Image (cartoon, rainbow, N blue to C red; front, side):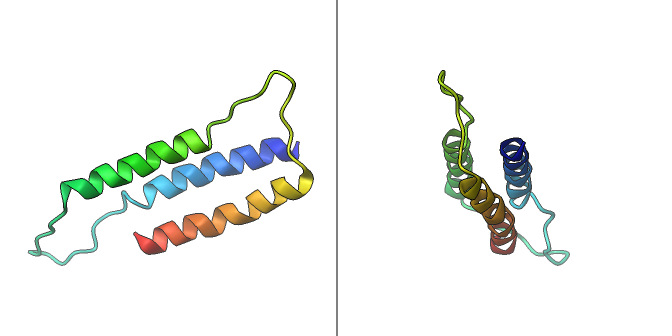
Length: 88
């Protein structure tokens, strides 16, 4: 049960992390924003990398993490998302 909760929290955290980079602009009226095309590619590559890193693959013999590992991951997800929002 705890493993399922941890996976759901990770997926919700992943979605929240992605939206940190899609937030509305806080620019004043009339200001012009300049963005390097390479920055969009960089963000896209990071998102693809995280997708592959956190892809859920279940081995044939079963997959389980210890309770301590699950709790540690569940504690680290919210601050990670908060840091992404503050950075963006």
